[in-house]
Length: 201
Image 1 (cartoon, helix red, strand yellow):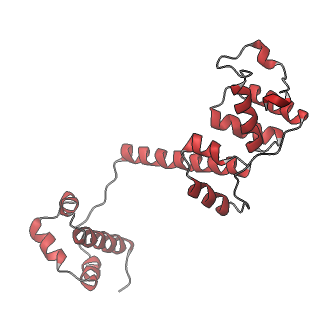
Image 2: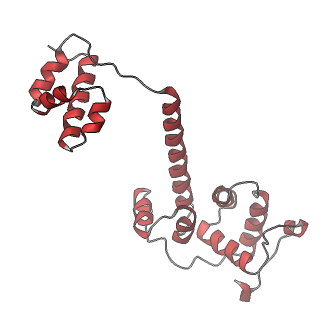
Image 3: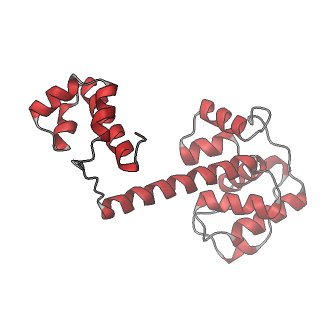
């Protein structure tokens, strides 16, 4: 007899139960509604036994969902997807390891693995190329224009709008912060384009 949709659900649930019992987690099985004597009998069941139980037409099992809790789970999943997508976009724009570690706690191994998955060559570690004066001007303007974004998204937008690799952007922003060109509270003077002197880079 071919399995019905309900039969498949019952079979996989019972298999989960037996695997959970094998791991010694009896409390999770009790929480599902099984009695102790039923648990003892399930522990002696084979996969063939579980298959036959699942084919019984009597519906002894109901699956329910907590909608409010599931909403939170779905929201968490969507946040994780956006989080991963942002990381991928930053890395594709040549975000350095130091940036990914600072923003996401990414380790060397995780960074290397992510770059490999994205088809990027090299280590992504090393001194970034020196920016041209035009690069600095475009990064400065884009950085100011995206001040309303969270810092990770700010870097993303700057990289996307200027075309300057993020390892160069990262080095520029950090040098500007170190020399006081980007104070914590920015003033109207921040709208001016500032060219760093060679000894400040």
